[in-house]
Image (cartoon, rainbow, N blue to C red; front, side, top):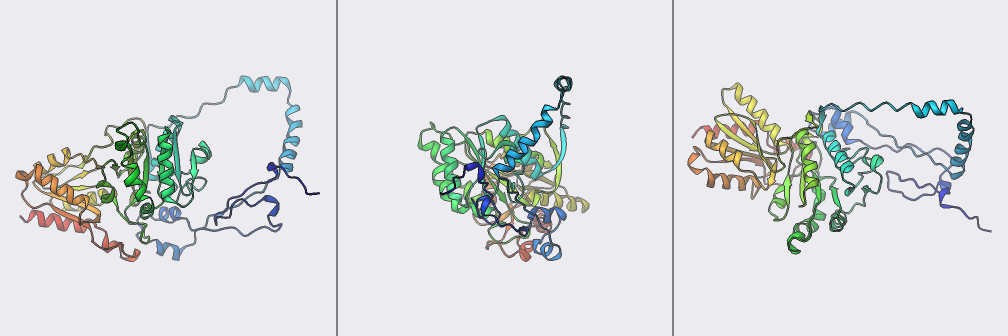
Length: 435
């Protein structure tokens, strides 16, 4: 006779190499070798200033061990039965004492914490998931692994696999599923593993997601957030370090934001999730690990507001995402040389809050727009054109752009040549002040 086994006697283990659904009784009797994988986060966290990931891989060996404990139904039953006598041996007096003694309250979190941007995003997502049961997280490896950059680390354990969902490697399917969930009243947060991976889902984003509300005359909302790592400076290959904001900014129906600090990341991800419109949420990979102060209680800057992050009098530099820190570094160097640069963090790429930008240009008379993306037909081009219309009589020099070159993103060893740095911004400052 065929032996009948219950479902409880099968334990499925999901291995990192993608083998799924292997029954526990088929596992080999001998212990298997540990599966090792290079951990991008550990490599970069070990040296946040590093530019080339390949050098770290060559110098050291980081490994993350994955172990799987096969547990049968008989083992579980045996553990439960062995635990019963212990429970029976507890006296009634001890039980009453245990019930009467309340658990110690958890220590309150300090209102201001020093967090890297990755942890700030994680905290923001955790708060959104806790406050609204309709919030879901979908993406590749967002579950037990916590995402490639560990932004979702621990969320599936806390909220369950029905709300933090590991998906197949299919960006079009992920975005399409999110659209269907939004139509049923959910608020999906989609993670795109790397910026270059968004393009298989580009059709769903631009032809369906962006147009769905207008197509239904406002009767259907699309409260979807699509998180996309942005920019370079991590020493990776093509499709992993791009800045594709212009593609989405050109598409009506999408909101686009890009925080540059942990504080902004914490609050902006929550505000984006609460929006009834689709939001493209760019996360600067170069700023994932440096720490910054995060006020967990108060936030005074709305989602779509730009902000002056350094005051100056000679030149205005507008930047966003990872380029904000580069602009601030350039401003520090310029100050040592007696020049005063005002830096404006754009924060919102669509819609753009031009108020602080125009006011700054009216004061300084000069504008430089700095971005990691190529300069041709870019967001920087649009900002330059709009400011020239709104503050033409205040300009004392042409508006200049500092951008990536109009070429495909190069190999990792050439990224420092391709990406704008403080020296290229300062060179533009010299040209602007020469007029």
